[in-house]
Amino acid sequence: MEAESAHAAIRNEILQHEALRTAMTSAVAQRATFIASMGNIGDGLVQLGTFDLFAEFGLAPRVQGLWTSPPDGQKLAVIGGGGGWVEGFWEKTARAMRPFLEGGGEIILLPSSVSGFEQYFAQYARQVTIFARERVSFDRLNAVAELHGRVHLCHDLAFALDPTTFSELRRMQGSGELSLFRSDAEGCRTELPPSNIDIALSRNGDIWHSREACLQPVMAVARMMSHFEHVRTDRLHMTALAAMLGRRVTMSRNSYFKNQAVFESSLCRFKNVTLAEEENSGPARPIPSRVGSGQVMPGDASPAASGRAQVQGQTGSANPESMRNELVALARLRREWFEPELCRLQQAVREHERTRKDLYDQLQEQRRRSLHYAADAAAKQNEIASQQQEILKLHARLKHLQQFELKLKQQVKISAKLQRQLARYRSQLAAIQGSRWYKAWRIYLKSYSLPVLGGVLRRLRRAVGILVRARHRP
Image (cartoon, rainbow, N blue to C red; front, side, top):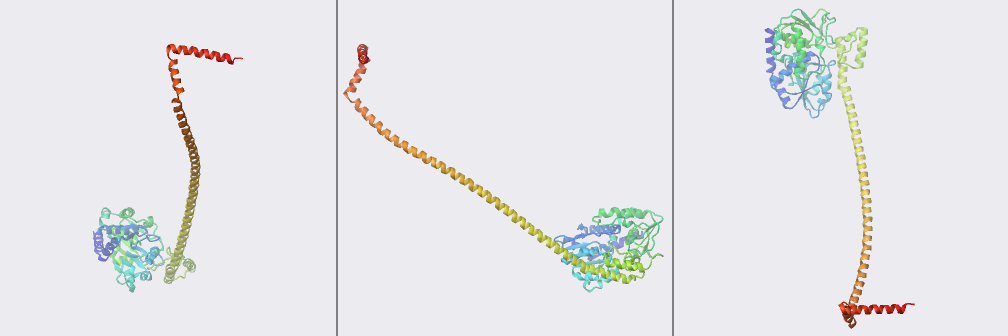
């Protein structure tokens, strides 16, 4: 099929793009983070093709959504491609990346359409590598002297999608016409067909973080498209999806150059795709497309722009080109002065909070140390009191021992005196035992124990006892 051949040829050119391969390989080697584009199902198709491109290159970078502040130590970021770079309209990515670039970080912007932002990129020219998906963006950026050699032309990465993804759906025979026109401010149509379905907005946000997350909603839209023979839309990636499915596609221009430029660089190779203008759509004009009707662009939240849009909506005399210039100037003022000043103030507040927290932590530490010292002092005092009690007990025991020692000494003295008395008694006993009276007494005792003589002596002793008692009796 011609559509399949055109898709394969464009995909092959993407895979052979040396600058793209070199940039991506270097980014993964430097542990760069891939920031997936946020947006609708069309952005999901771009991310799906990007994941297939990574697989073809053998790369598996870290993936995350658009950060509010760069992670610590992050030096390089790869930003998913798309149309989120329209000055004064789509500025969320530019605002989110400014602090990262201000801090010396580098970015690689995958194939995108860029309207404006020349001054923004020129300011960080040495830190950016840009891939433009069509000639208009490429020429405008390449015309900035600081960006020479840093801008490359490459097809939209939706075309890097694996061709086998839609093999079965491509063979289906559809019938009838499907209208998928934009219902947001980027559309050009003043009236939408009654049967119009802006299906791309059925999923929207920061959700395209993996191939699986992208595949399911994209396949759901692809299945719906496969039931139709003709698709009419002014959404770029609904056109790309229908073109790769082999449907006949009539693509209308959007409110700035994106659709026509991508058609001329890539989609024109699909014979089943034509670029047309509807009868109820005016010529392509710069964003904002509906300021004259009193509407404010989603990307411009400045009160001045809101008030000016309301006044011009009442008078009906707004000049779209001058309005765009004024809104771009306001957006640039907001981006280059107000937001940096706000960031500076926020940084000052963070520094103040950090200082306050440090002082609070120091105070808490001092308080903790004071409590610790007080506890140590109390413990020391308790220990000293305990030691004093022990000393008092030792003093009492020592006094008791001294008293006991004194008693012992007294007992020793008494014992010595008794020993002397005992020695004297022994001496006296020895003297008595050596006397004649003692010897006579011994003989008497022995005689007293004899049977005959002893009996006589006993009778004699009794008689003497009787006489003595009788003598003393009154």
